[in-house]
Image (cartoon, rainbow, N blue to C red; front, side):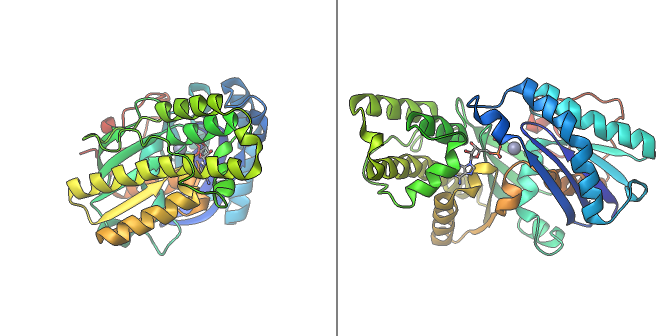
Length: 348
Ligand code: KG4
Ligand code: ZN
């Protein structure tokens, strides 16, 4: 298997990784969260400026940590889409420049497809398990996306459903803001919810009982807003704040778990996987484990290190594509900011 240098810059993380034979030799992530926090969300112009500043630093550090030199790189990989156009451009062009200079091939990777395979990173050589546990139903859930994918075989997948409005992470972040918590609110709500009562307040579980694999979280956010408008000052009480966090979290988690399990049953798979930043949520991890155990399904969660955007997942997927005979990507290929998952090679 080739030694892969992978780059990921689709949103607000600048990341470089070195991967070989399914093993991550280095995974360096430089997060821009502190820069975007004061704006309450990702500002594309600031993101690209930071990517351009950080890319040489993270690439050098990844090579150093892996103990290799540029001459040892046999394959380049980079996220081609979907994502913020200028952010994607920074990473893809850097990888293409290195591929030209080193005279090596490059594989352009679909960001969501890489999330799909991130639960397999970190174990023993992931390949055997990876093939054994397909087909599976995979939940990808972050600040930018919430989707269910049916992984039918190696690199064969079908999008079952996605959010029609806000992503689950966005719902965490926006409700946290209403509660006076800083950005990104998801991890803070998770911490506060641990000491709150999830049954204190009853918020809607959007589309949970509909016969659809799509999600919708903007109505939940709006119902929290109306609820708070009717009870001004409620979130100023520390225990009520914890109860609000726990109740909102319970609505989001119950919706994600319920819809994932129903899709798994309908697709008759024996395995469920989950990835993306919200998969760090302790309640989601616990409830998915409980529901899968009750349904006799095996569960594979991305380890927290690989939940958020990272280049290791880009490298691992590129390596699999290379192994399965995918043609390399043109070195002057453009970014695909709105790349349809179904249009990637191998989609079922
Ligand atoms: O995958 P990610 O790092 O970036 C993208 O959005 O692509 O995901 C970030 C999202 C944010 O919305 C953040 O609030 C959420 O993941 N998040 C969490 C937790 N950790 C991160 N949400 C709930 N509980 C957590 N522990
Ligand atoms: Zn992502």
